[in-house]
Length: 417
Image 1 (cartoon, rainbow, N blue to C red):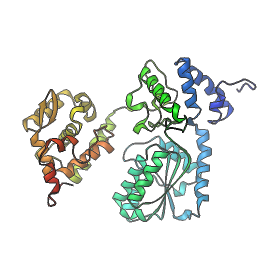
Image 2: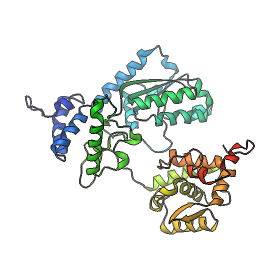
Image 3: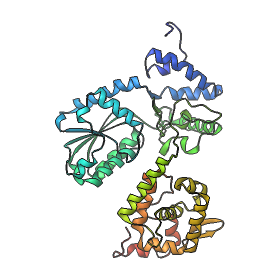
Image 4: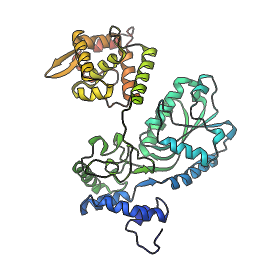
C-alpha cells in the first residue's frame, strides 16, 4: 500500500520509470544498492541514474502501442501487405521474444505476425512491407545479421520496403544500420521512440572539460568492484544506460548489472549456462557449415578439429587452452589428442612456450583455403559468439611473416577470396 505524503529519496530518478507504487517499492531497492558505495561514488552513480532508461512491463505496454501508432501515422501503410517479424535467431530464445509477444498482443497484430519467414522466402513469397521489431539496438549488429540472413535466403528481399521498429536505439546503432542498408541496397527505414548516445561522450551528459574525469572515475570504481573489463563500458563500448524488467542488454554500463559474491546488481541480467542443449546447437551449426563448405583442412576429417585448428591460428598469442576446452566442450584427454595430432601433422609449433601456426599450415591456408578459413572465422565469431582476434581473411601476423602472401594475393587466377 502506498503511504501518501511520504517523501521518496529517489523519486526524481524513478518517476519516469513507472507509477508511484513502483517508485516507492524501488526506492528501498535503490537505497540498499547504493549502500555498497562511498559518498563520492554515490554521487557519480546518482548522476548516471538520472539519465537511465528502465523499462518496466507496464511502461513497455504503453510505449509499444505508441511506437506502432507512430509507424502507422508515419505514412500510409497497407496493413494487408505488411508482415511483422522479430530479429533473426537461429536457435533458442531471446529475451526480446517477451517484447515481441507483448508487441503483437497489445497492438492486435496476431494475423500479421510471423515468427520465422525463412520458408516464405525460400518459396519465393516476398512481402511488400516487412516490419522488423526489437526492444533495443545497441550496436546494430543483430538487425544487420537479420538483413543479411534474409538476403542470403532470397536476394529479392531487397525490393521489400523494410521498417525497423525499435523502442530504444543508440546513435551508433542507427548509423551502423543505415550505412549497411545503403551499402547493401536495402530499402530500410528506422522508427524509434528513444535514441541515446554514449554515456561519456563529450557534451552529452557531461561537459567536455568534465567528461574524461567522470569516465575515469567510473572505470576506477568498476575495477574496485571487480567488474569484468569487457563489461565495464558495455559490449562494443556502447556505454548505454538501458535496462528492461526482464533483462539488461550487455551494451549497458557493466556496473549496473554486475553481480558476484561481494556485490549485488541493481538490474538483472541472465547468466548463461552451458547445458547439453547448447552443445547440441553448436554441433548442429558446425555440421551445417561443413555440409555447405567442406572442411578447411581436407586431410583432417574430424569436423570439430578443423574448427579447433582455425581457432588456434586466429587467437595466436591470446590462445588459452582452458578457454578453448570450455568453448569446444573438450575433455583434457581430447584436448591432448588434438594437440598431438596437430603437432604430428606439422600444423602447429611451440615457440617461446606458446602455440603458433607452423609454416606448413600458414602456406596451406594461404594458398588453397582462404575462403573456408574466412567462413569458419565468421562462424566462430558470429554464430558461436566467441571473442576472437580481429582478422579479415587470415591473422595479421601472417602478412608480416609469410613472404609469399602479397605475391599470392596478386595472382588473379588463385581462388583466395
